Image (cartoon, rainbow, N blue to C red; front, side, top):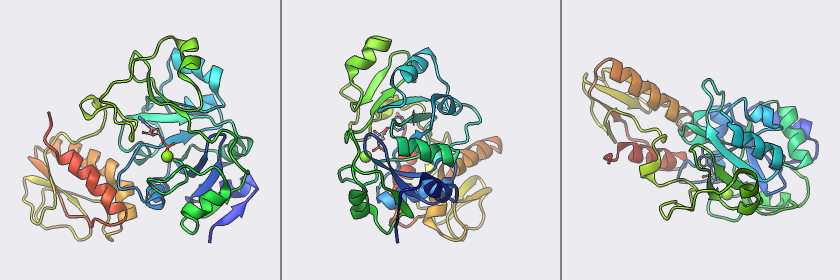
Length: 320
Ligand code: AMP
Ligand code: MG
């Protein structure tokens, strides 16, 4: 059963325990989970039923807290001063030692951060005392919810609670601005207009035709920071040799030179939570030991397995 709450403290207690709580922002209702808890983040993807991991926005109660997780430049600071709290999301490089789960940014080295302008959202974030990762609180492929009733129709039963703050005042998603290169780039138009941003930091880069709008990401060729292992990755392996590292799932295949098990119990949620950290560790360690590649055991293509397999296929694809 999904509880309907009006007390942000109660909702924050659930978040701190790794549960999912939908909450109102000035744009749409978000599906929140503790951004530092890989399992909670995996649960967000499971609840949305999305066949891919897309990077999530991390919500914080003030700019200072946001800039503790990412590296802010001068542009980021004046934009924060001008538009936060408000419907502007900034994509910036992760700070070394950043506590946020790799899965929250779908393995990217960048992070999207925002301070929302809704009093209940701010009360929740302050009480939670940690960054909250939240996509819109709808099932994949459906419109973003702007009332608690919409959230229940979409996700009822699959989440611990919804914090009811009535209808969202803007009903339009946040503007997403990429500040990871010298020229700022609008990834998604939203509540703060291009003109308003340009009045503060000057002209934005023209949108490129290669931008994939449904993902808000630049074309794969420009995704230099999107993590792919440096060693070749072989999928659906049924055997493995001592010259290879093994990305295991369930009972590991015998004979590998090095093993990282995504989930010994064969649980998809645990595997999703460990995927990006596991790939990074295995790649680095296998490289140090001079192994020739990584073999991945098959992962069932249901539930979160679909998104895990999508990510592995892209990591295994030939590189340009
Ligand atoms: P939603 O979760 O529906 O509010 O959508 C979040 C938007 O932010 C999507 O368009 C994402 O692709 C975008 N986004 C989040 N994190 C990043 C990131 N690190 N780099 C680029 N885009 C991001
Ligand atoms: Mg959405």
